[in-house]
Length: 87
Image (cartoon, rainbow, N blue to C red; front, side):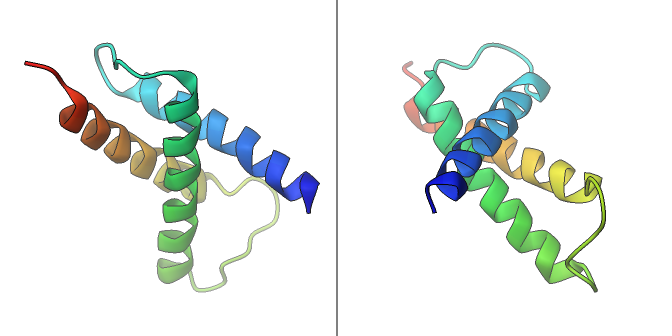
């Protein structure tokens, strides 16, 4: 249980950082928001992949699941940036 939570946090951090790297410019957010948006993006990516995949499980690294998770986290990051931007 604790290992799953720690793994999710680490995976969310990686997805969040990768999502921020694919977005041009600087995003004004801290590492906690990056991890939270990364976790949310990963969960959304896993859900979308489960909906479109016929097997849902692959051996090795599932690149499509990673790509979809990063795209979802990037979309969440863009949304967060738009909502918190000060004009």
